[in-house]
Amino acid sequence: MGKVLIIGAGGVGTVVAHKMASIPEVFSEIMLASRTKSKCDAIAEKIGGNRIQTAQIDADNVPELIELINHYKPDLVVNVALPYQDLTIMDACLETGVSYLDTANYEPKEEAKFEYKWQWAYQEKFKEAGLTAILGCGFDPGVTSIFTAYAAKHHFDELHYLDIVDCNAGDHGKPFATNFNPEINIREVTQKGKYWENGVWKLTEPHEIHKPLNYPEIGPKESYLIYHEELESLVKNFPTLKRARFWMTFGQEYLTHLRVIQNIGMAGIEPVQFKGMDIIPIEFLKAVLPNPGDLGENYKGQTSIGCRIKGLKDGKEKTYYIYNNCDHEDAYKETGTQAVSYTTGVPATIGAMMFLKGLWKQPGVFNVEEFNPDPFLEELNKRGLPWHEQHDVDLEL
Ligand code: NDP
Image 1: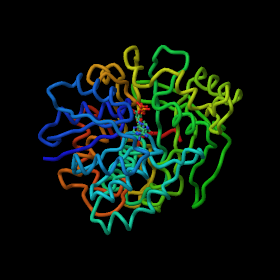
Image 2: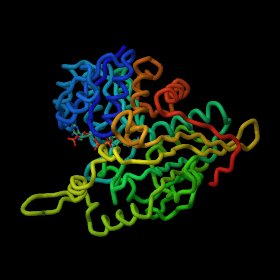
Image 3: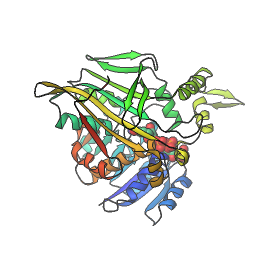
Image 4: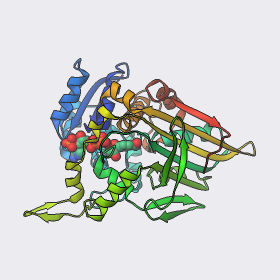
């Protein structure tokens, strides 16, 4: 049916390549390109059957991207490199007339700040070119946004309160590791907290607001209010929301390490001089921390991510919880990666499938909640991430 170019051969790229390779009726040709070609080759070899072609690419370099895209001629580019590459890849897609999908919004390297404004600014260009850009198609953002759209479509007349709850109750056996790219992860979780209430953004100190929440099949876990990128598009696309927040669980060990890392300056993004060289502390830290893609082998336990929603249906107040639990060991058995990479890579694959099947194919730049959630969630059930619903329950929030 279609030809895809995956950019980025980390934990998420590994899952996307595995999943796409297992659905040949949709993904008839696949190329995996990344900065380090040997990583692409290792993934392709593991998948076998000559299903995956590989290439070297520096995705910060637009002319290089254009050359690769023109040479391979994909129907869609799936960007699972880093958020820093979003704009260069979107530029190359526009130049070559190819549609685009990613899982994380653009973030300038020199400023730990993520916002949709840079990518939303491409709206007219993609529209005029008749191309689709699908933004944020991982789990969060991604499935959480689609869960919200599904709730709005099927269960509510008005959404009022949205709490996205993200629990990782897994144990990888390491004193400290991040579950996806350490640089991006640490930049995200050390930011100030931020949530939407009554039409304005409210700021909190990092991890200032927290409380234990009960997660299905897991039990109570301390959950911290942090800012997460999907809140920005969700409050825009669901304007009846009076409040929208995001909660993530962290263990005490993780928070202690994080505090030390910050206090000693290792989370810094400004260059420091070391032996005559400029070194960015957080980039050096990434080099010494465990590779998130390699955590899978000893990872045990589950993730549980979902949306807790309160709103109105037929004039009455209603509560609703929609979630998925994913087991680290099952994810590892299937793809050789842990559940955080898995829960990101599977939705990216399904988003690409929605595009190739023509179900999510419109000119312009879209956040995933703007598309029909039904065919996506039907596939999610079949492709390793079954989801569950609870109606009229205590949301704890
Ligand atoms: P990794 O660090 O494991 O992988 C990133 C990959 O991108 C690496 O293979 C890296 O190459 C490659 N890369 C980096 N810079 C370039 C470049 N300039 N040119 C070409 N390739 C490059 O990250 P993850 O797989 O954990 O995460 C991938 C993306 O998924 C990130 O954007 C992350 O924010 C997002 N994500 C989204 C989630 C969601 O739910 N929406 C959840 C988790 C992650 P090299 O191997 O040479 O370093």
